[in-house]
Length: 330
Image (cartoon, rainbow, N blue to C red; front, top):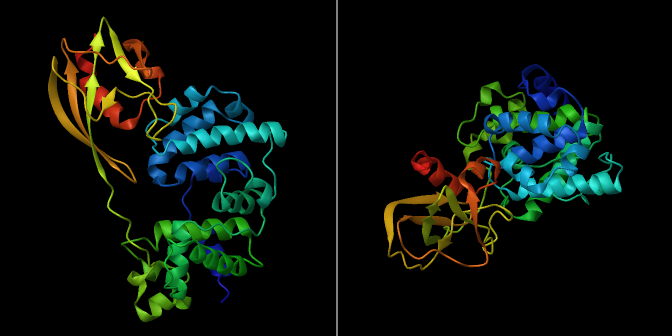
């Protein structure tokens, strides 16, 4: 099944004009791919543009303080992406003279670059015939070939990767890789499928048999556990008490409000209850504002001047609380 010509011609004529497609800079493509993971392009674009202004090169990112980098990422979520991007930039400077290597295996040695990102950088930036299989590509290929294997299993990803690798032989690797991604984003979407606009519809088994919505096949994830906390808003003398207790594994190096499963809230005023949904757990936060109760005194808390809040990386769940209550401060 030869689809290279149709796909690449469609991409050249129909792709979105996005800033990271204006050059073949491997660093810019790396940043865009990491930011686009689990995030809509429309959401990540302003972050991407600010990021490239602040950190225009690998060296600029590698030499920036981690706290500043995390602050720049604030609001995009999945913060480990930013931490690994920063670690990876240091590796590139130390091990590759500040230049991303034009080699898939070497790319995968860099922190935060897995098989998909390595394939994307190699094919888009360096023109190498390296497959890049993400959720969009899995959806397009499983519908195209009616592959009913569970895409949550690694063996299915490898199967699709082999298919894509064979398909892209003889193509322009950059256009082919981006074409598959764009087809999944604009035409072969999860709940809306614009088959009549698809350049591959005459070669698609799903379209021929009208089985498109049966694919991809994926095991439903387990229901996320709900964790209940007392979340404390403590302000005294134009200072606020923050915590760096990240023992739960969420957002290492970020600040948060002091938060406990069981805390004596006598002397606090209950404000409201808020919920924050993560990919694998849900926080139900009962928010209490300090009046004259007991102030936490554990090793993780520290007083911060309120005027410094906008310079610190703060977890999204608690940033919402601060943004709602900040008008009462000062």
